[in-house]
Image (cartoon, rainbow, N blue to C red; front, side):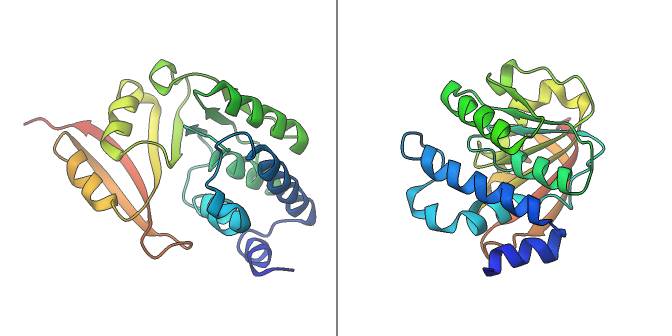
Length: 209
């Protein structure tokens, strides 16, 4: 057993069945990446660490009683990993993946069937999506923080938290966002990169001055 699988078992108490699902995910991702730009080629030999564990680390932070909405889902990170962990924990959570690329949506749909996951996939741009229920928005490798806030703000009454996986430019992005918005922030150091952080944003409002 490699260290990354052992980490998932220890950290999230994942079952053998869940590890089997992740192995299916890895194989199908590598196969599909030959024709689709799903993940960087240089990360293909580090899928568990760079993609699975990186996505999984938000699981303990988010409110699983809310709808979890993954914006710009791409290869399913982090939303599909969240759904797999919910199933592992016997949590009947509602996860929605928003992805504007029809080809990537086809990948997500085919993968969900292979993994026997009930998950909603929305083939549309974020600005065309209307939030219905109270939601936790999650995002990885989407847009910068200010652009993300701008796109989400029309639905802010339904958004209870925004969780962003960010790299080393996170502080610069926050400083830019603070020129237009006020918000409460919790910051968590990434377990997969010394330069990365997870940002949990609540109470997002336009600046009044």
